[in-house]
Image (cartoon, rainbow, N blue to C red; front, top):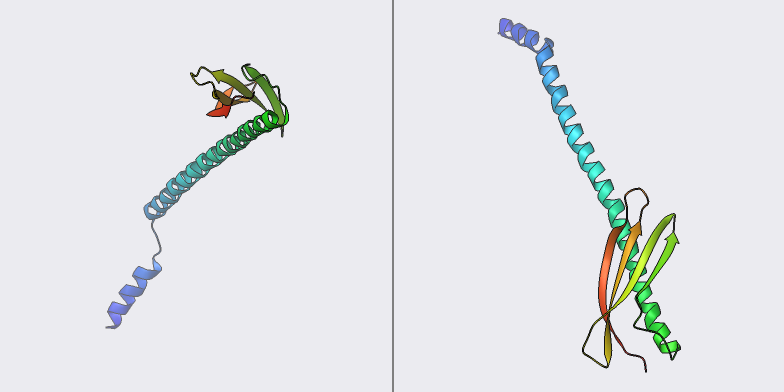
Amino acid sequence: MMKMRKKMNRLFKRGFTLVEMMVAIAILAISAMIIYSSNSSAIRHQLSLEDTTFGHWLLLNEIEEEKFRRVAESETESDIHTQRQITIADKTYQITREPLETDSDLVELIEYSIELIDPHTGNHLIDRITTMMPISE
């Protein structure tokens, strides 16, 4: 019984071999690389989603402003193609308003689009909305 305990103690005091340590370090390194890769991907997507959300809000605001102008002003030119740039937080957005053909005499079809203007990578289309508005008389 005593000999058995001595053998067991010797086995437990021995520690880990170099190969076991290298395998453990390799497993930790691979898992750290996977975690880093997924986190950097999530950060890139978050920045893209922030631009998309902000651009969508600006586009909805532009549509609501036109609805207000149609109510407040009796004569508005509704059949013109317009572009306007907005700079907010060091980012420049371009909002485009383009009337589309329709057969109705009561409503008009208008397409709004917003692009993020980046001098390094070029324009990036964020959102496009097509809406109907009553023709002002």
